[in-house]
Image (cartoon, rainbow, N blue to C red; front, side, top):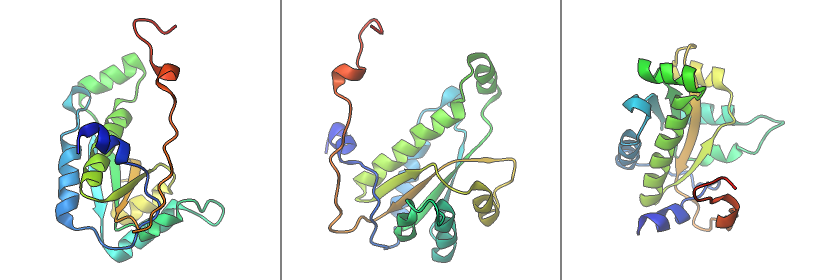
Length: 182
């Protein structure tokens, strides 16, 4: 599969069959994330892989509530990856102040996508999650209260009859510009 085909195939999986994910596959996904570029090579992340069934269930329950139940699918994921934002190098911190950009969040997004693309290559499905209860997850995983969780990734084997919605994306002419914004 060429790269563009891999990107086209990758989507947010919301139907998992519940099987655990082999650590060898997770390790290859982590290697892809490790190789992601970051501002000043800060690599401002720690990936906490939750594959213990009981702990994974507790984390999954912190991704939804009785009022907001759209993340219930996480219960069937084979693992949950919690990405913790780490303090970047001093040069990156200075750049954040001057340029008013949160480089670690950008860097985490790039690393997370590298993880997800490798997962697709491994035959796994993923879904990045920004909606979760941070404090209880920190407690469950012994993450210091001073740290921030950037996002979670549900990862697992898609159900055999997974319904994949057609990707709806802007046409090239709606977002592409050459040499000028206009």
